Image (cartoon, rainbow, N blue to C red; front, side, top):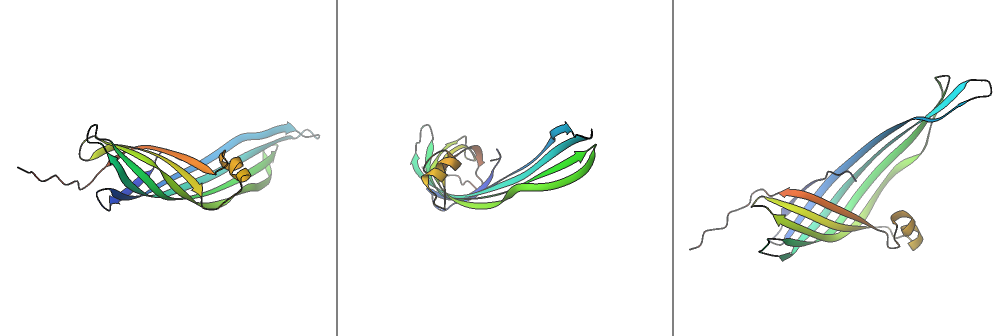
Length: 182
């Protein structure tokens, strides 16, 4: 996925938080030329391919603080939720003879929307009351079951698991000061 993800969430209790994220990627590639050559009659022929694709990802996670170390202030979270992934792609080819377009056609491409179970572990390290570094390591598995062969061909393992690693900075709003006790 794209390296940037926007995430928002809120605390349900002191140990449980719910978060939702969004990331988007758009790619456009123009290959010039796909092929070139000379026809039997001496005309120059060339082909150009254009590919366009977009992908979006919406993870919805519950974060449960399993361990909180006071020194060095590290927090370890269990992550559980689901991820929605959507994608679309198109491929277009343009054939030219002596620079004039003689044929345009599309092939392949399509749309897909998939849902995934998501589980993993998160690490948080605060740098004050508002800012903390976050590292999440999650695994995703498609809602739809598939054979081990299909899983291996699409994900590289027989279980159909894909991995996601997120490194980021979190800013916490509305942090209350602890009451002073004497």
